[in-house]
Image (tube, rainbow, N blue to C red; front, side, top):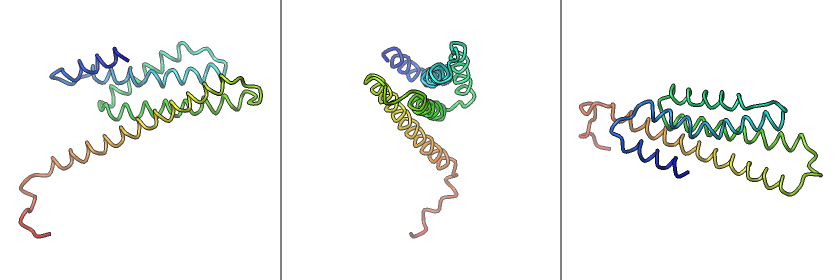
Length: 153
């Protein structure tokens, strides 16, 4: 958390915005989605997933670089992580006998479900940022000569 915050501050203070910003967003917000995907494949499908982790993290970074929009990339990656965590919790509860689960399994599933909710809230907040930014961008594109300030309302 501390290193993420420090790099976020450094990126914000730079005079330019370039591929490093998008690379960082893809790394920070792609890692939870990659971990959730590997948990699904390991726990539910019994597939080794080390290579899948790196492949999915690379795909998240590539998506962020392609999108070139931090709010959109954060929204999409958080929504992906939330969906995968939901699949993980639901799949775990369906795969294993819930009458024999130890208490710690319920706690872990609760934490994973809560994390999915938090990721959904972050994604929804990013969506509001995108809508606000687009509305601001659209209002700035209206030429000042086209506005009729003399008309009564």
